[in-house]
Amino acid sequence: VVREGGGAEEGVGPGGGVECLSVKLHLPEVEEASEVEVELSCEELLLTAAGKYRCALLLPRPVELAPLLCRFETRRRIMSVALRCVGGGAALDGEAGGGAASEAARREREAR
Image 1 (spheres, helix red, strand yellow):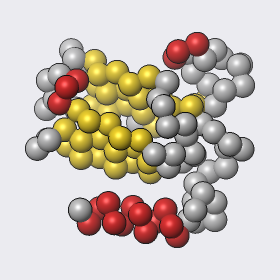
Image 2: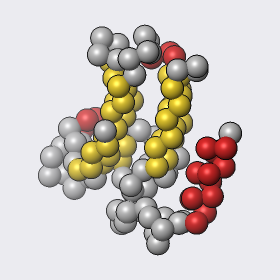
Image 3: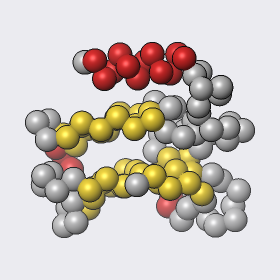
Image 4: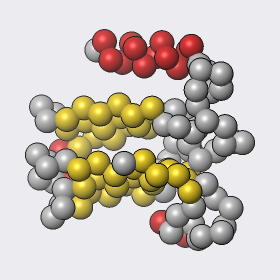
């Protein structure tokens, strides 16, 4: 689940003018946070749990490289990541945010 908008995480208040993305992933086969590796670029979130999950998510907007929040809820087995959007907030598509270069990078990662 990816949601856009202002958030309450880490001091980002509603109406504060800060745009962020919230990503939540249900990982029923993961028992603890140490099993999950999260990598972040300004355009993509990559989550892996060795032998269990590999999720490459192209983000709809560019984000800061340091997440506002990255938490694994052990009881519910949900990974939550909050990301602060940067720039003018233009959506990443074929015309903005690198287009062909981003697509080529995505294909290369999928081939691995």
